[in-house]
Image (tube, rainbow, N blue to C red):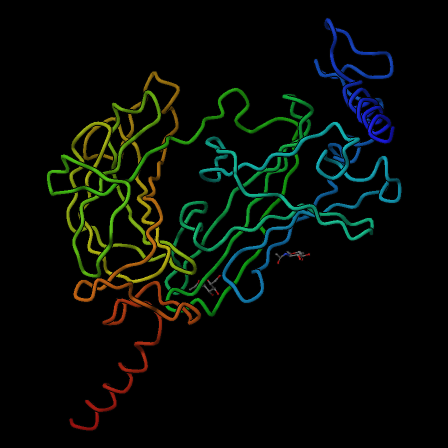
Length: 390
Ligand SMILES: *[C@@H]1O[C@H](CO)[C@@H](O)[C@H](O)[C@H]1NC(C)=O
Ligand SMILES: *[C@@H]1O[C@H](CO)[C@@H](O)[C@H](O)[C@H]1NC(C)=O
């Protein structure tokens, strides 16, 4: 009996949920047709909270997650309906009654033309007050991959360009563009500095009609110098020299050359630029790079960034007919799979670095391969000794 009534309730719930769906091109009477989507009558209560051309209810903040170098990005808004359980929140994740879905996108740069949907989970912060928020975390191991890196002489500056898209079905209602900066001292991950940049709200995408997806590529380990064979997994030994193959994988990009490569060792708190000792860039569709495994760390990924070019050995990109590359500079990045650790060649054991220490991502690592600990103290001491003997 109980099971039957439970089933009945379940059936009822499904019918209520399915209530606002297009049937033969028409909406049930208790629903509204909005840009080809059938939505509940209360849908406008949710879209109204997105603001209009005069008011933008959203604000952003950034902070480092306590005790880490991971970035916490929070977008807050004030919800006038926060006490009403049927109308609180904006998105379906906050309130199943809502008609709005939310997606996070990552942009290649400030031109906001090339974008990829982000896989970061958006957390809804709701402490029962009128202030609600969307929050996501970018772990430091992803900085090189997700953010634009530059260097101001003392710090690395990571610039992030993202958007939150609010949509009804496939119909975009609002896009919130925002950007932020994360500064990290080059020689120590102790000194951190972050600020939220701008936030703007639009009804259309900046790249309306011409939005592009990122040119994808893979980064694999070569078995030998000629790279006749590649593997996705490899053991990394400190000071070994290895060849990597960077291959364009997006359909239609096979004809392009990869130029201006930059390679990084990334991991938690780690963004160490690798020295490219040799490279072979003159083939369409792929490049080969020789690097030295100059650093030890756990859970390391090697990232290669390069610019696509229609001519070999040049960064100039001709105006292609192809829509794939009409951008002035389309970038790509390939990642190796995550390597558990860098090993010592003699012992064949993982090198253990104290990863709780601040990381020097700029100077050469210590003799044991670890980028932690301070060289400067030794340099200072030897300078004193030298001074004493002169
Ligand atoms: C991120 O920042 C927000 C707002 O300051 C805070 O409520 C939240 O707890 C933080 N989350 C993490 C993971 O640090
Ligand atoms: C470089 O950036 C850091 C972090 O934002 C800042 O503290 C420092 O003053 C900047 N240095 C220069 C030379 O601009």
